[in-house]
Length: 176
Image (cartoon, rainbow, N blue to C red; front, side, top):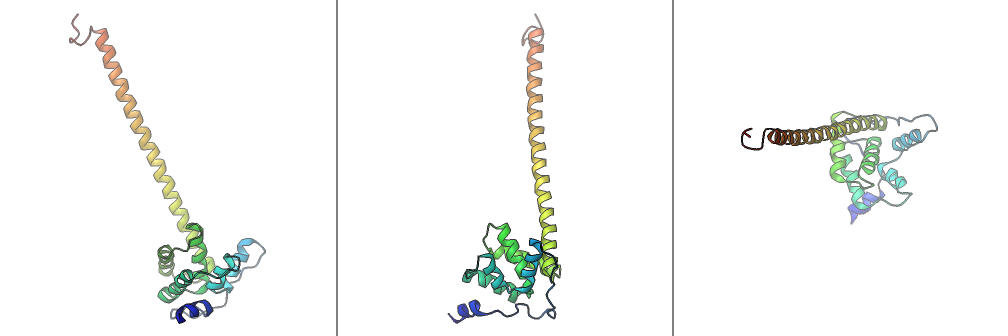
């Protein structure tokens, strides 16, 4: 019970042990993207998730995911916020632990420390994956068309053979 209460009450900096915390990387401008990045850079992951849920308290399971991302991967708050945002977007508003952990590991490997860098990296990866899906579906279409063409060629060849047989007097080797 104490751990649950602490999860709900804490607003500490989640990143420990990797690098010194820096000032928030705030964006100027009035666009929705600039406001979103500024929220990611200034709010704790718990508060950021709460703001995504119209101010409602995050579920304990979601808080555990956030806490584990911080504790296990030593990610700064802005990067955790970017992960939360991305996973919710990709997984139909479900904060999936396995997916969040895979994304976190990728960002750790890339040594990403800001929300902007995280969002750029995730957009780049998502674009590559989207292009691969399009390429695979295009290849499937081409293979299907080739199979259909092969079938049509076989049908055409068998029709041609029947026609030649009829011209040559049937199936008796062309003898009349």
